[in-house]
Length: 200
Image (cartoon, rainbow, N blue to C red; front, side, top):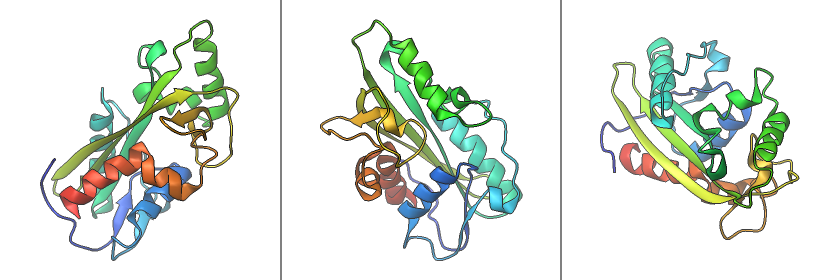
């Protein structure tokens, strides 16, 4: 378990421009931050180029950029869907598969087209979380949830690839689940448990 600096209060930046992700992270932080939870977009912070080759590296890039410019601790998430039969794609490029318009319907169709002719529907979500401070100190953790892909997409809750992902041992997609249930078992929840133990 990573150890490092503890969050000691005050405002916290969520280094994301994805409203769904900001909302989910804010829900997971509820009651643990005594200041404001601020989205990077509402502070006018630019999105840095994600040049890392792993989820952890990209989370660190985003958290460092927001903490440095925003002058407050910043929490960044880099997460994505890893599909076994697609050699791990879309992986760290999960958001990019949706294009500049964040068209996840098209991204889900691209995955489904790529799986044509294969019986292997296994996949997993990964979430790397980095908490960074303006002086450069950071703590990074990772969470994961395994499952399988379904088609057609089901449910309009969640965001991203949630409507095609059924976590192991469940019948509902993340897109069909009540938010509280998803928060309990998701890759982001797994990463949050690790981060809370390390920093909160």
